[in-house]
Image (cartoon, rainbow over all chains, first blue to last red; front, side, top):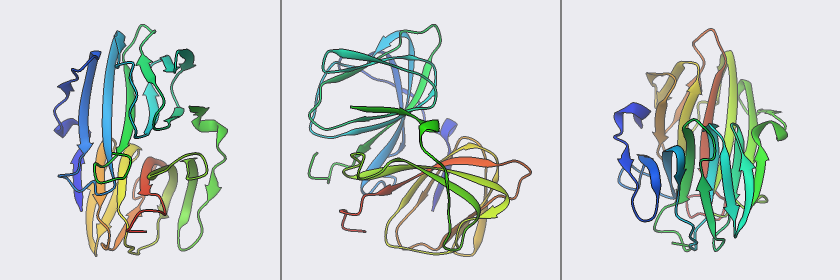
Length: 116
Length: 116
């Protein structure tokens, strides 16, 4: 068993087309994420993730803050307590359109999965 | 894309050896959890999950509350913001030893994974 606190993991700036976004890999493959990985993100007001697509899905839970997520080019508002599934192959982007940081989980399959 | 609120999902009482535990399947396989599923639990003070083992891993994040988790028969205290990986094959149990409900995520691989 591995038990750590969220704050034990250093938040890293996300590059590759993101703005104002930090990531914490809470459970990665090295830590034992055999089938999937747990990641936490913080997104500053005005920040965004890349508008991109890939073969694997995202499973997202919004802890705090509000913004919009693009499904293709169509925006959908989200807020605290929302659960978002972005299927593989769908173009998407998360944007912070609010005045406060967004705190959210975004889980992904491990690299051994067929979709990766 | 699928976007719902956490409160849209009905909390169901967990049976099979659990006490005072409710589950919400936020993303199950039917909803598109192709590789893994997102589940949220509430555990009342004094409540516990079964002391059991299985081949698949748990990836857990504690949102609120405090308690202890058994790794085999050894208890480890946990609280808000803790991240717990229970590897497949390890006997485990979550117990609410505090005075307030515990709110936590527990993610599992989908049933198409080799470990299931």
